[in-house]
Image (cartoon, rainbow, N blue to C red; front, side, top):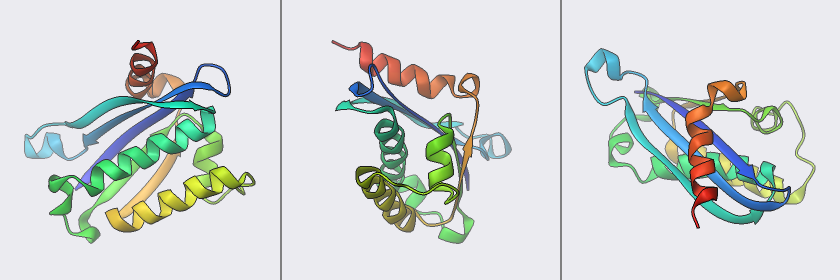
Length: 147
């Protein structure tokens, strides 16, 4: 199974009220004539920074997968997950290209690594322009706009 996951995190102010957006899609759906979108959601995460929100979005997507019966039945060797984020910093940290200097971000990176192990398969992270991450951004803004 091939999954495409778009995540976004944002804070109004930095730090400020923050939220995440996640869109999980089955990249094989067109081949199997099945549902393309598996899940999409936004969630407020309190007061924090943009970088924490970006990491939290990845964590929430991985947590969704660990609890999803659809993915649990897929052998780890058959699962390929492509994450797309519009945060170059977080992508470079997740890919090991940049050091994570801040202790609170290092803790989030460790959490991502633990969840990656639970999910299994091959997981990649790629930075995309904001214009290619509009659906995840939409869920961030919807969550922030809720009163």
